Amino acid sequence: MQSQTKQETRAGGHPAGTLYRPLYHFSPPANWMNDPNGLVYFDGEYHLFYQYHPGSDTWGPMHWGHAVSRDLINWEHLPTALYPDENGMIFSGSAVVDRENSAGFGENALIAIFSYHKDRIETQNLAYSTDRGRTFTKFAGNPVIPHHGEGYDFRDPKVFRFEDHWGMALAAGDVVLFYTSPDLKQWRQSGSFGRGYGFTGGVWETPDLIRLPVNGSDDFGWILTVGVTNGAPTGGSGTQYFIGHFDGETFTADNPKDTILWADFGADFYAPQSWNHEPNQRRLLLGWMKNWQYARDVPTNGWRGLFTVIREASLQRTPLGLRLVQQPVPELQFLRGSRSHWQDEIIRPDTNLLNGIRGKALEIVSEFQLTSEVDCFGFRLRTGMAEHTLVRYEAKNKKLVVDRTNSGRVDFNKDFAGVHSSNLSPMGDLIRLHIFVDSSSVEVFANDGLIVFSECIFPAEDSQGIELFAEGGSVRLTSLDVYQLNPATFATSTP
Image 1 (tube, rainbow, N blue to C red):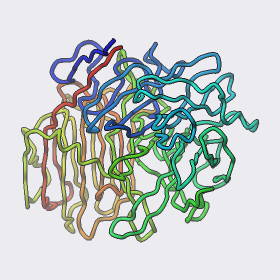
Image 2: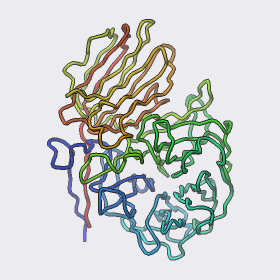
Image 3: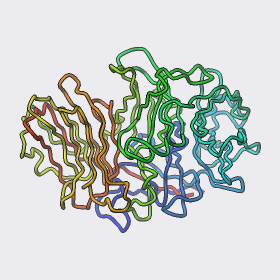
Image 4: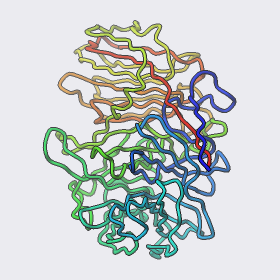
């Protein structure tokens, strides 16, 4: 029986429960979603699996939800890919294309590698598909890595191809274990990393090991990203990363043990993963746009969870060494609608160049030239009814701040409202802010993605204004583009 596809676009009026439904960020068709899983490109499609509870909009027995896209913008929801069974819930993991049939499931089999979780015992397992990911069969020889017997946390395998063998990064408490395999079935532990490196105040989860180019050179480096369950810069969960080398067996950090690097300074960027087998050799990241402090309490109805915009990752040399850079993928430009443009404007206190611009799905591309008199400048987003989300650059302190204390609904959890900040030095005398606004989110990419903030917000429906401000003196706006963004298309396929 052929599947049927139902088209839906998230524009116009909002049926009950969809007030905060994003217009172009990915969210589940209904119910609960958290970590992205199994990001893989195969046969013209970008596959996106994710932690999913199809029976409720609160966390529960974990499945793998599934969607595919040909352009990273418009998505087709597919039926649930993996279900829990007598062996446990289906926790996070990854997916690869077995082009050489090393596992014996068939040439070009799509193989998911996931953690079973039952009674706090976690094992690593395989499921395979020979029909382009539409159905999966669990391997009869599971588990391929049994529980290691040391503590409860032993999960989230990220598998990748390295030269002539498979590699795996696996979270185990406050370390990442590395394994190698010739066939995805037989695994040998080859190394470990952690034990005192970086931030160790929370359990480590969802590792990813990524080879990245260094901007402006032919060099490359490796980063290891790790989700931290508690103690990130804004409180609660967050994502740290390490820069170093991988030799096919294990990861070695370049920086001292006490170096702590955060991938995002907003409250809502967790469990990021990168796509395997990306056809253009890009390293594309996607993160869960929530925080475990309040994810279960956000005021959506019938659905919970969304993902960030997809980012292309690279490394940049800075005075402090190599640092992660994240840039929104250029495919997002296909969503651009009407454009408002300004150039070489002087922004003075108590004026608003953007008076009359409204929208809840916007892209803002701006560049400012600092002056000696300005104290701070920036944007107030989703303004109206005495609410706004503030993006402010403090010129004297060289600090970027995102303040969501008056962003709309903040009363659902005591840990939600907050002021978040990061140091940000100008590029010469320039500050660049690239901002994406959606129904319930704001993402800020500062200085070409060197500093990023990912934030959920819950404003009133008619809070759609935008303000550009300066305080303490004027600042020169060298260029500004504000785009109205069209909604992405989300289709639902049923068997």
